[in-house]
Image (tube, rainbow, N blue to C red):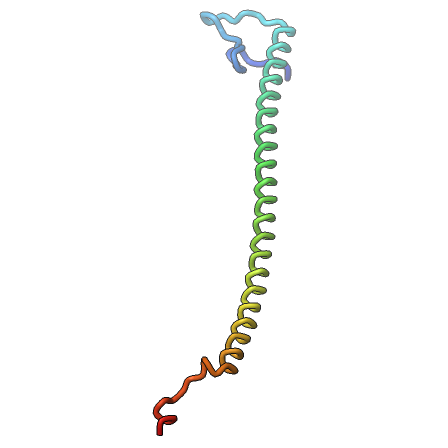
Length: 116
């Protein structure tokens, strides 16, 4: 059997060569080459579909990576803003405490000791 010849009964997609009633029809080299070309085309189409699927998945992964990077950057920015606001709140809280302690309105007075 030559490397380009396929055994009788071999199948590729919708094209097949079969043995009829125990006697095989002679197939020309041209028919065998056509069969092999069709198999190659089917294989190429399967490879193309597979490559398109891989490309689609790679693009999807890259898009998700970019989204993750964007979200990570946003989280970092929010954390930084949160720390800044906490610091400002502490400063304002201390300022308010100082104002309250300096004002006589907010001083705790012992009414019993003043009356005596």
